[in-house]
Length: 319
Image (cartoon, rainbow, N blue to C red; front, side, top):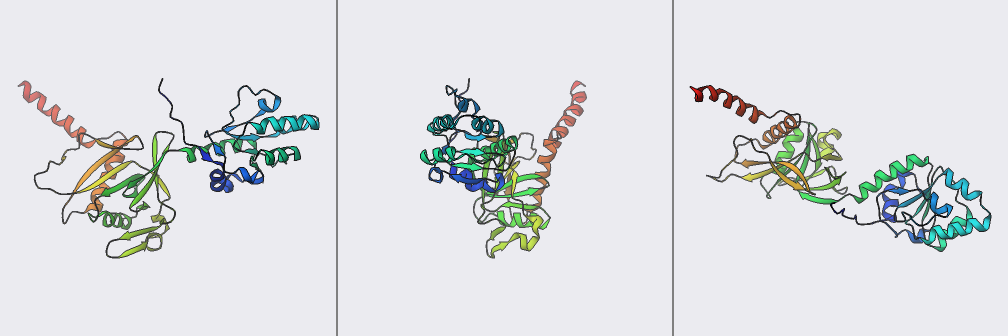
């Protein structure tokens, strides 16, 4: 069995800061424990622990109490409630969320402050919160990295354009924007692995909407080409490397074999385009994106032509 690589933990503070709005979280106690770490990208309902069974407890997860757990706790005598909350918080869980805007009992708030455990309220129904919080945690735990290159969305194909400085990346991106396509990131693309199979590209928030063009300076793409020229994130479907033309260097002229590069462990189709004066790089990258889209739909022009040539030569060889 392959060994599963454990994720790096995420702090409760980061979870709260980035998703308080989306999850409608309100901190009600335990602010001193916001630096606690969430060890797993999922959510746990601690019903069994509250009822007294503590042999197995997924204590590294975000904990959520819904109607069932809250009604059970209220049914207990006060001294028993104090005991159950003490046992629960003594396991040093990352944080506790009360769904459906349930009001935590004062015994819960006192124990949370004692054990320095953040407690939140949320108006969502329990299952909706669990689903959305799990998606948020998976995004926070996802492997991340950066790729040197600009990224453009060409008719639904996410293309990272890379190459040495001054080779024409910015000019290519401008030509593509002029054709109505969208900029995802300029110069540096932030990548995230989603579900272990898809690589999503985006831009840093600081420089989003902007591009640096050599000789001109910084331009605001949204202001110049319209809001449709900006896309916040896109799946990476193709990597195009612009490379200076070298006389005598072998260049793939048929495209029968598909090259690939690895980004965060995922193989991404890769094309190298030789750069010479007079070549319309924007058009070439556009055609490469179209070709990638056709291949993903099951059509490969090079293979079709190769099959046709083999079929034509077969009778001649037999004769």
